[in-house]
Length: 490
Image (cartoon, rainbow, N blue to C red; front, side):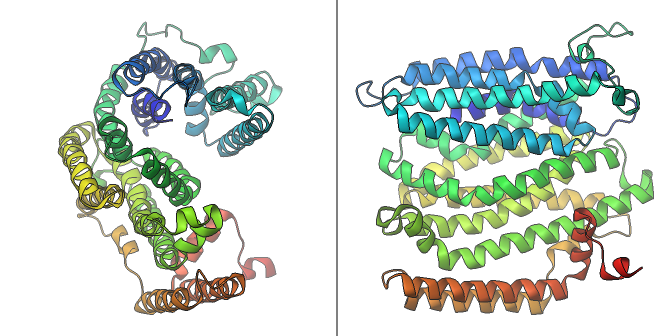
């Protein structure tokens, strides 16, 4: 999975950010040509990284873990297959086909899970073949969903009504020479290169602990397994909620704002809308992150005990998950601040930011290694918190400078009312006491009482937020299309 995610990130992340930037006049033929370059780039990275995984890294004993080499090949191939759908994905995102993205990804994950479960139950001796084939099946279904959708859309009479689409036939999505004779837009290509240097560094920051574990062997396989379980559980909210928000609103900010212009030189209506949305997103991220941090502290051990039994809940698991709950708070804020920052930065600012990322990447890797030697697997999470804190600080400074000469102050979204802060503090204190007396060795009646206490405190906290954060509630109603009572009456 690290091989797969690294290949995809290095091959496509920079292209996505550059090609989704808000440019009003764009030759989509050149943009699509540029996006098709992700495929040969993905082939290069999959071959190079596959060689690293098989020749430079430790290969498991084939008697214990058979078919490892085949797994490496199939995971690299699945990354290349997914890149075949990149032009379709970017076109769909640029024209707000949100439902297509949700359906395609959900269907692919569901079918992959069904196939994995079936093969594990009926053919367990296949080992890594199961997960490798399931991953290849997932990427194939994902690409086919996008290709099928655009094939049917562009071949139907409704496509003539969609004036915003830059293509009229499915063949227009394939590489071709444009009218101007230029294969790609070199301005977009240079911006892509800037983002590529940044994405390379960001990948180190995103998956740094996995690289340290994989290349330096600072943890044994047992500790790596516990860390991976906790990491997957803790990142569920980030993957299911924060990541879609970051991707969607990056596109929004990139379309509303122009990169090369200061806030005072742009349409003030657009600047005001971007500021209002950013403020509400920051408030939402802060509230969601605080909720997970405060209530996750008292329920980490119980969650791990239900999920994996005493093997997870009696060792380092609870401390890891509690630390990760705080990390989720930083993840939430960083996702929002960076999606605005990267959408509004000029090419020169992106290049300058790359130097900061370079220093941060180096210090993060060193800190991960030292902290892990000092305090075990918790050191990875502490290093991630440090890394995320620096990135948030960089983004906040950029946002402050961007709106300095305007009357808008979107960073006010990071301020909460004293009443709501008191509700969080009270809820955290009550649930911490409840955990001491009711969890987790006293049996299920006591556990259920502990859960009931948490549910009551969570309800009271969310009720306080509903009453105090009226501006955020209005924003959520607008985004979700929920009418007010007065609207219904009229």
